[in-house]
Image 1 (cartoon, rainbow, N blue to C red):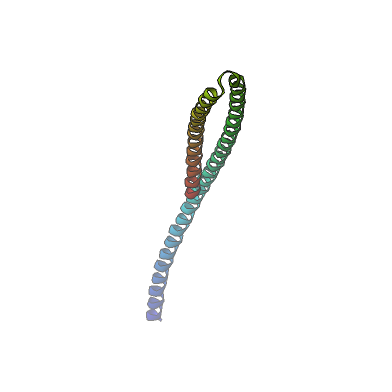
Image 2: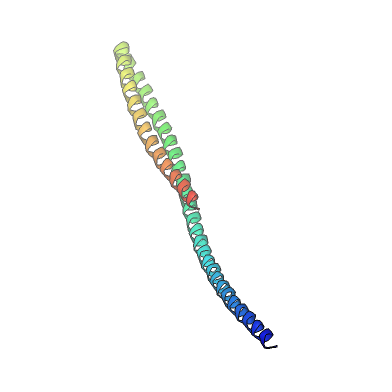
Length: 145
C-alpha cells in the first residue's frame, strides 16, 4: 500500500508539472493570437487607407485625362480660327501680289503650324507625364495592399 501510494503521488506530481507546462503554453499561444489579431486590425486599416489613396489617384488621373481632352479641343479650335484668319489674309493679299503673298502666307502658315505643333506636343507630353506619374502612384499603392 505504501509503495503504491508513493508511486501514485509521484505520478500525480509529474501530471501536475505537465498540466502547468500545458497551461503556460496555452497562455502563451493565447497571447500570440491576441497579438496577431491586433496586427490584422492594423493591416486592415492600412489597406483601407491605401484603397482611399488609390481612389483619389484614380480620380486625379481622370481629371488629367479630361484636361488633356479639353486642351486638345481648344487647340483644334485655335488652329481652325488661325487657318480661317490665314485664308482671309490670303484672299485680301491675292489682289496685290498673288505669288509673293502666297509664298509669304505659306511660309507663315508653316511657321505657325510648327509653333502650334510644338506647343501641342509640349502640353500633351506634360499632361501624359502627369497621368503616367499618377498611374504609377496608383499601381504602387495597390501593390502595398
